[in-house]
Each structure stands twice: as structure tokens, then as C-alpha cells.
Image (tube, rainbow, N blue to C red):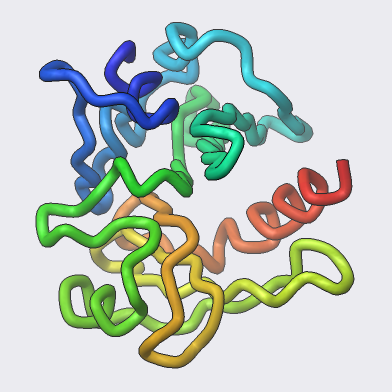
Length: 183
């Protein structure tokens, strides 16, 4: 997990893992893993939990470019075991095998990671431009963008369980991000 912390801070080392694996992992954070695997990140800067579901956020980067890592956990299955379900990162350190990262154009995202559909949009807070969420549910990857034109840019990459649409978690995601923007 030390490599994830380096990535959040914008540092690089030989041990750093910047790879986004759709439907599986973002860096060293594995979907389906226990939330206890996140302890090496230290305490979250903020979190919100209710009804066996929780969001937690860590911040990194520099004063000029603050980055954010959000992790969604939920209890599921017959044993109601809590697992990591969604990971969202704004740091350009993390990238897919095709080189797509936060900051890539929507055209580049479509070329490397399509097909995907517009899952919805949200406004972080009044007066702030909308964000749009494009999802490839089958693969388990989604992209938050600052617009809908080919020259729009990816502002965050989300890795989620494959075969499960981000629409299943979308209200939870947008409510949490709006809560963070209001703090």
C-alpha cells in the first residue's frame, strides 16, 4: 500500500503500482477485498457510512493539483461480509494498460476503453459545472468527465465490479461527492 500512497502524493518509485485493471483493481486496491486492506493508507480524511455501506476519502497531490481517492465498501452475500466495491481516483498517476488516466480527453477514453454509455450527471455544488459519468458496466470501469464533447477531459476514473452498472451505485456516488464539495 505504500506504493498507493506514493501515487496519491504524486511520487513515483519502482514499487509503485499505477495500473488500473477494469473490474479488478486500481493500483494495489483490489475489488472484493476487505476494507481492512486499506489500513496502510492511514485514517481517511473524511467518510460517510450508513446501512452497511460506506465511502471513505484520502487526499494527496500538491497545492496546485489536489488529488482524491474514494473507496466505496458495502456488505453483501449471505454472510453480509463488507468488501471494496468501487474505487475512484482523480490522480493522473493511475492509468489503464492503454494509457488512459485522469486528464485524458473523452475522445482518447472512447478510443481506448469503449463502448460505454452515459450513466448520469451531477453538479458537485451550485455554480460549479456538471460532471458526467460514462460507464462500461461489462468491463467494470467508468469515467467522470467535465463535459460531453470529444475535447472534454476525464476528471476521475472509477473501477467497479464487472457486470454491475455504476447506476447501481450512482446515487450513492453523487450524494457523497456533493457532501464532500459542501464541506
